[in-house]
Image (cartoon, rainbow, N blue to C red; front, side, top):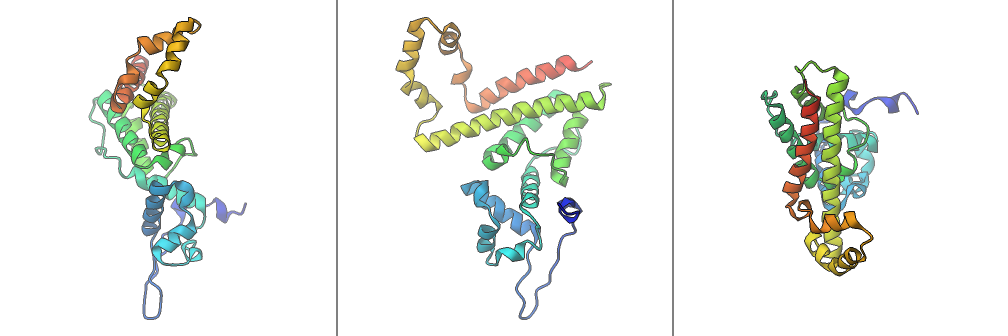
Length: 241
């Protein structure tokens, strides 16, 4: 790998081209990234190729590489751009639980609007300006309690892992519903006879309890998300002095 390939997209200056008589109009990273997001939202990340983006913009694929040198750069730019949708205040309110709840629900909203983003949640850290804004806000919420930066980052990561996992599961259910035509409630009804046979066998007592006693599966997606989030926040509360 050459040294040039290791240069972060955030260190590459934006290419500016002026159009003139006889010249094709120039583009911007923002145009390319927005078009890529539009395609990925509709058809999945794999569909957002330079060729597809170029066709949508009415140009040749090779011309776009002058603005975005490689696909990893494009993905970094896309991930950072959707993080701009996070509607967070300039600084924490002082109510850490409310602030982390806000971050969590905003993150869920972004993931549901852009399902391709969820699959990339565990990718290497994104150091774009929008991503850093969210990171700074989240860690700042837990600052001031006498915790080390490792403890702060660890608690924030625990929260992020829950949110990403929950949203990933929710997106998977939505995809499955589109594929089969059955949402979770319809699926539970369809598998009801089989579930009853398992219960009647007496071999799966914990499964039986999860079917007979559990209430969480019957909550709305938002309520299920909040149920798990409350327990993660309780764990964070236990770690604060």
